[in-house]
Amino acid sequence: MDWFPLYNSLRIAAISTVVIFFLGIFAAYYIAKAPRLVKGTLDVALTLPLVLPPTVMGYLLLRLLGPNRLIGQWVLEQFGVKMVMTWWSAIFATVAVAFPLMYRTARGAFESFDETLAQAGKTLGLSNAYIFWRIRMPVCRQGILAGTVLSFARALGEYGATSMIAGYTPGRTATISTTVYQLWRTGDDALAFRWVLVNVAISAVVLLAVNMLERREKAVPGKGVR
Amino acid sequence: MALEVDVEKTYGAFRLEASFRTEGEPLALLGPSGCGKSLTLKCIAGIQRPDRGRIVLDGQVLFDSAARIDLPPQRRRVGYLFQQYALFPHMTVAENIAAGCRGLGREERKKRTAELAAMLRLEGLEGLRPRQLSGGQQQRTALARILASEPRAILLDEPFSALDGHLKWQLEPELKDVLDGFAGAAVWVTHDLEEAYRNCPRVCVMEAGRTGPVRDMAALPSDPRTVVAARLTGCRNCAAAEPEAGTGRLRVPQWGASLRAAAPWRAGARAVGIREECLRPAAEEDENVLDCAVVRRVEDVSAGVLLLRPRGGGPDAPLLRMKVEKGAALPEGDTLRVVLPPEDILILE
Image 1 (tube, one colour):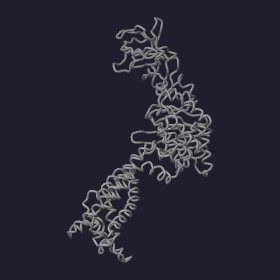
Image 2 (spheres, rainbow over the protein chains, first blue to last red):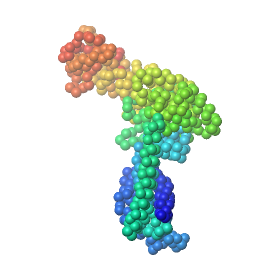
Image 3 (cartoon, helix red, strand yellow):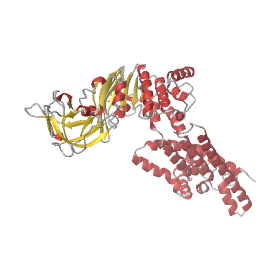
Image 4 (spheres, chains in turn cyan, yellow):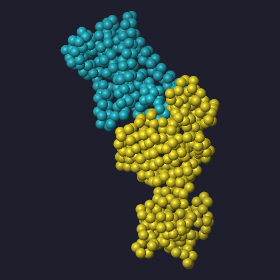
């Protein structure tokens, strides 16, 4: 059994989770504070990828990043790099599709944050960076952690947009999800089933980890959000 | 250290116009809920920005709309005791206090935290998190954290609103001790006259976003001067009044009365008030007598209260309250002649 799809899926999911983490928190923090109209508009725009079919996302990404398209052409001319059909092309797909999960859960956490804590920090002379990273983030950590794990899980399972933008090249762009489809299509049912088991196992471990984290939060007295 | 405040801010339909000066001893900012007391404190701390005005602390301009000065809260050195204390829930008591020690090295910070914990009787609790503490311990932690930041002024926003009544009695003297040991300015926001009276020698009454003059606390109950101050000091009977032409008496339409007051009418006055304990049944020779229907009698813990409707007054005028001895036989529905002694009538703005 060639383990490349597992390795490829994990690195794509890991990199996109890091990207989504910072993008999502940045967007959530500023949009939570934005005026109503701006908030409503951006909220719809940023949540859309969650409800659109992944193939539609894939199509839109191809229109932007394809070799003859706006961004794709520019990058090709400037750097001589094709943005589609490489292993890292899939990161665009997974980021686009999983981003709303991080953004929405983080925004929910930020919105329920007690602003007087930040105000108290300011009157005590604490810098805005300290207040954000040492007060706001730890107090909101449950929501942020949940968003991160959900994003990772979603990125790991992404199929539609990934297959359109990265294709299926064994040993180069194959992920677990595209491999399962390819194996099933070519009639290699036994191998497809093994990959299915691998996927189920990873997802179960991730969810188990989340549950254990939550239980630990509850078990330690005085820990967690008021 | 002197704190001078003169700010205006429009907040939706609400308009704040706060102006006062305080130095040394705590100043009570006294007023009913929603009158803008907390908003005033937030403007001083820099959490809210006034539309116009000037705030000066210890000679340093914190805010001046004309000169476009608006120091961030971090540089104002104004401590703020929030109603719910705003302790950082994920930090221990020691970490909360240490967070207030700005610009100190590791060792100094540790030392200062220990000193403050000892001063506020938090020893042994350093490793606990805020929600494992009692209300009083939370308040002391918040105070220690504020003192750690070495503020030049401390603002207290209804410091006992989050606590039970009996705890309040225990904690109030402690808070007063801390403030007595504090050299800077202090503003104590409350809606409770008794709390203000016990702890603050000076008082500024606030009403619907406007502050009155700063006055001696001791003089407030006997000479409230405004309707709001009268109500806050427990004067329940207030009604609009105006001088009668030529007679030197006061016309009170809601009570259907023409009264003589011992105190002179002032420019700006608009109402009279009389405390419920000053009303008494009239004798033949009395002046300022009102014929009243006894609408209801209420048994309070230590006294009875009669609710009276003046016969000559309007049907929807507020009822007069008169304190009587417990168990005094005065059935509802009876007519009672009461006297409003001229020397007890307050002239109010």
